[in-house]
Image (cartoon, rainbow, N blue to C red):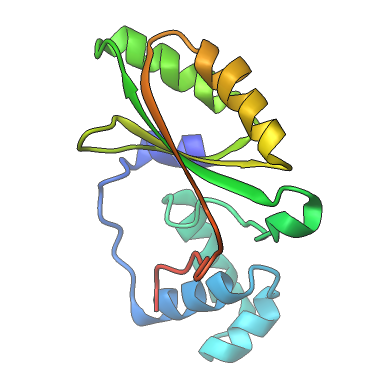
Length: 166
């Protein structure tokens, strides 16, 4: 679904949303398991227009996916690190190859292109420090074109949320 929406609607293209659309998004951001009937009751519309609005926002790439936030520590993924990476070479081909390789690592749960001293930022989760060391040395350290790597370990989560519409 996400790739199709991106082809039809570039990521930076503004999609107009009225107050009912925003109300639907607020509800879904708080609980993606809400039924169309529950949403309809909350926004004072019948189920058909609510369903159509949700479908339109999915098709237009406003709603990218429905996800569950998982407590990393409860599933033995308690070590979280933020990795900053700079590349040795900045050609389009070498950058694309680096991105493709990193996307294949299950330890990487978020991946950003950034500005500043580093080129990329990764959020990495593993079970233990030994697992992170293994990831750093035997996976990340073996990726072609990797220059400087700086890891910062998360000591605690203060806020972890996804809502963009408030």
